[in-house]
Length: 89
Image (cartoon, rainbow, N blue to C red; front, side):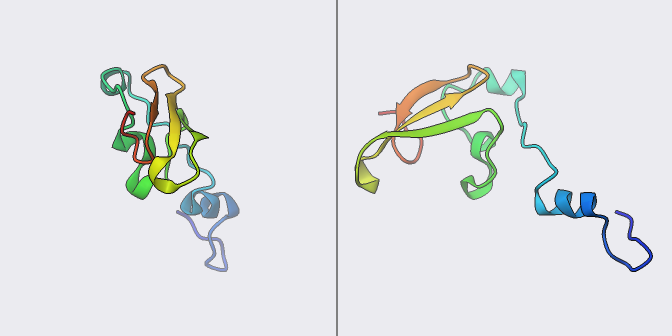
């Protein structure tokens, strides 16, 4: 990273550091084709950096313990209903 004359980062570099400029495309055909449900690579550390191809949609439930979600990989690796933790139901 280069700093300008005042020692500050350029705006594009600041976006990249803050996460605004980086993509989260973690699709790897060899690894992902064997994945049949949500994996760490799909959601990242503490489920806060999702892969661009990961989709999660709540389809039923009113309480945390009985919610049902639809988990989908846009690349076709999986498409199933699961609980809040991604376990198939």
